[in-house]
Image 1 (cartoon, rainbow, N blue to C red):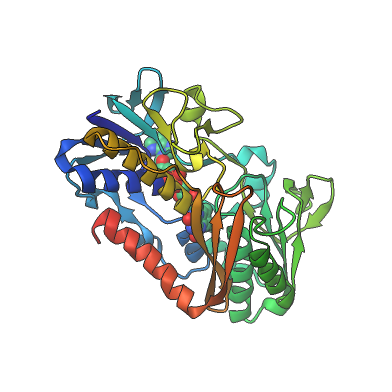
Image 2: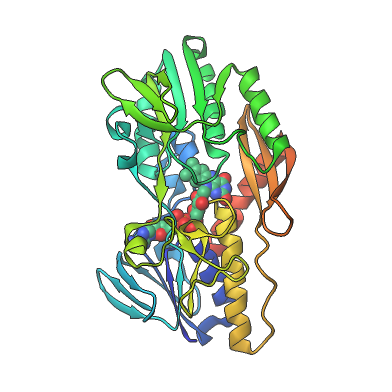
Length: 376
Ligand SMILES: Cc1cc2nc3c(=O)[nH]c(=O)nc-3n(C[C@H](O)[C@H](O)[C@H](O)COP(=O)(O)OP(=O)(O)OC[C@H]3O[C@@H](n4cnc5c(N)ncnc54)[C@H](O)[C@@H]3O)c2cc1C
């Protein structure tokens, strides 16, 4: 078990490579492969779209990774053979003793007709950068924050976008001339935490944001500027901020590893049905939301298991599916929801009221990972 190949250097891949390096150093050969040259935190996309930061400030270049036993390879993965544990990239072939798929979720813009022509998405860096150019000219009319399919990354993110849009338009003095609506496919904004949902719904009401629960945006009519919902209802808009439908990357689907769109795993160990092959994070069906903190937690369990195997120790505890997500409430305050998905009979969440102290805690969340993964 010396050659560990990690596909994807996102939350999951970075945490896995870091934990293995800390414990085993040069006793292990880790190849960490990603097509990008830099990592960007998911929540930075909100900061980018509202002009609170710049693209350069949020990019963490992979070339800065310097960890014993780990080499970063900027390559595009073109094929995965999970049975042979062989990975083909645009630069060659990698053989693995242990293979971890951490390739995240991609966006399927074509699944929502009209989204590209009439709307904008804020879930990619490019989309958020484009919106940073579009938003300054939006001064009147209706903005819709609309989710086009579930599951989607970071369930609180659409609610955060609506609240931050309110602040953004208020600061520009145009809020009274604008309406904001949010359409999400769940009955409440954050279903596992009724307290968080209640606080978000109250925040929408206080700010005059229309909340449309239990609906998905099925298509956009580019001629009439109308969003068509999954029940046939229509909402007109002047600005559409979309969360596109997600799916596993094509290369993962082509590998035959997926079922119902994502890679099924044992939620306790993150093992796939292929010996020596694991999947962590958004690419997998684990029973937890698609969020960085859960990808990171799953990666730690896989790392602990590999370390125990190498050292001949007992296997670690099963993955518990616990994580804390920070929620931007606007007005310079951040809330927090701590959720436990797997240890009880059903998911349970605890809400911490929005505060400026949690703004600082969220900053520390980012800076601690920057330091740990990139040595910054
Ligand atoms: C607006 C927004 C806000 C968010 N806020 C939060 C938050 O506050 N807290 C939180 O925990 N999460 C948040 N998230 C979610 C979080 O970003 C993701 O859930 C997390 O990044 C998933 O980690 P991962 O390791 O599974 O995949 P990713 O981090 O997506 O990493 C996958 C990697 O695989 C690479 N890749 C894909 N295909 C290929 C290929 N063919 N070849 C080579 N490389 C490839 C990609 O380049 C990428 O670097 C947010 C997301 C968004 C969009």
